[in-house]
Image 1: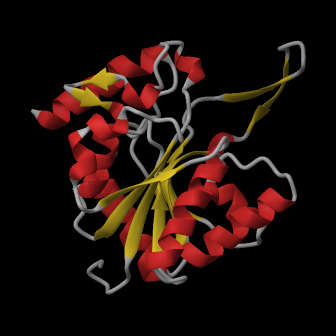
Image 2: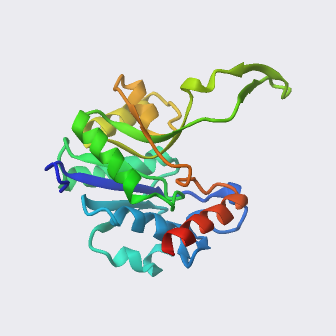
Length: 235
């Protein structure tokens, strides 16, 4: 239970294969700074005592999670995920609906974001709960952004003053988030993050300032930077 009396859960979709990493191993199981990426990610969430529990959606054939000590924590629960990220999130939300309430808050966090800072997590929770409006961690874009043609020629330069790079966690009420993801699924819409589903459902989504260190490990070059951040945090 959070300090405000609102119950909060975390969901980690971790059923993906991480093909862009080209490592032969799902990226969440790559080891950096003395542990797997998934372990770092779950531990970052468990560091917040305001979370009632963490539900991790794994591939149905996953044989690696059971070897990780973090899954022995009583606050961590496993469910079988799906082919798409949204399928995994829906599976985790369905599990929470059994033990939780529609008005509970859920924070969905990428399995491949191991460098989440407790201060950023608390800032998101404080802002969302105090305003009763769902929100996401995000980072303002500081680079000049170009829109390209199909031949990789510049069509135009976009106004970056209102552009943000979405991060996770993304925090919404359990019931409305489940309904929004189900509605998008029925319509066959591609959902890359939870905020997209809520936007399609006509729900407001606020942007809460995050940190550049909350990077998503996607490509091999990301591993070194994530390891550096984690080593600094450990020191």
